[in-house]
Image (cartoon, rainbow, N blue to C red; front, side, top):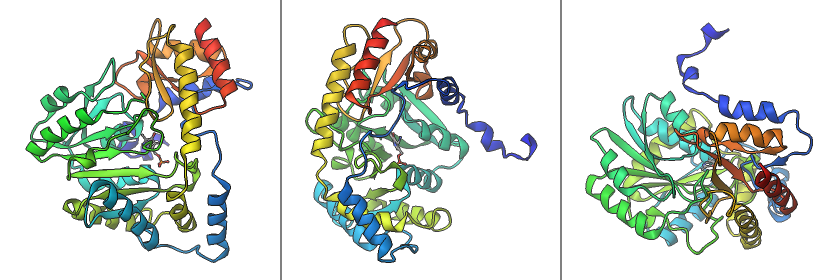
Amino acid sequence: MKEILSDRTKLIDSSGIRKVFALAASLKDPVNFSIGQPDFDVPDELKEEAIKAIRAGQNKYSQTAGDAILKERIAEEVRDEFGWSEPAVLVASGVSGGLLLAFLALINPDDEVIIPDPYFVIYKHIINMLGGRCVFVDSYPNFELPIEKIADAITNKTKMIILNSPCNPTGVVYSEQQIKALAKITAEKGILILTDEIYERFCYDGECPSIADYYEKTLVLRGFSKSYAMTGWRLGYVAASESLKDVVEEMTKIQQYTFVCAPTPFQKAAVAAMDYETSDFVDAYRKKRDLLYEGLKDKFELVKPSGAFYAFVKAPSGSGTEFVEKAIANNVLVIPGNVFSEKDTHFRISYATSDEKIQEGIEILRRL
Ligand code: PMP
């Protein structure tokens, strides 16, 4: 079988995650700190919008770049937020879909992409598959934006810099000051920024600034999966200022021959989602963040997360992988840091679970 597979399949190594799930398969009612999706369900009003769209026969292809009403609603949002007069918008099959289209449209073999480490896993694997080169810049131990290291990593092969704030896996939110400093550097060199803002609504301590506010040559990727717990609906979007219109057009062309369009009835529901008030969810998640952080901070080395629903915790002894094996043997599922990093010193906790399970998990982790 092996010989029929493409060489590019060998560039993806998912053994770290698979090992966790294999170990986890035997557990009964574990504390599951491994899941990257909210524990609440899609709000009923939004479910009704999707059902209404399906009943009304809106089940065919939408336009490649997305339903016209949804695109206009997204354009209005980014116009207001970033002051872009004629934004380019593409509705994608999740942020993952948007990322694939962006990388397909932009990355040539040997192009370099600068990525703060730790990072969300997808970036590395798609870029590698396309023959691009990931240039990781270490952001340990506080996971703030490593501006000087990024500046030093820029070469004439640099195609883009990827930002993810709030960050998966660290929960860190980049400050306005850091973002402005980076925008100044990229403006001097004209380098493209791709900012993955899928967790923008999970923002607990004031604002979560976007580099798109300070730098025009920015592709913004945002999604519906996390904000409304609709990870299975496969909806996200790409938005950019007029200066990147050609990039978004090329991405749309690739969508035409790959995904074709994002799921139509869910695009209809997404229009209502954009006006749906999510502050109750965010308040509940802020409390979960507090519960987890307060429960671990005196025993473990961890940065207080300001967004998303993750904490990236230093393994108290041994490697991240060794600690994860111990945690799983004690019924707590966590993910080793080397899934998200070139280092294996930490582990990721997702606190997107019930308060009772968070409490139970804290108690077990403290005993290890
Ligand atoms: N970016 C980040 C940082 C994520 O954590 C995720 C989901 N785990 C995604 C993108 C992809 O989300 P989706 O494709 O569901 O929109």
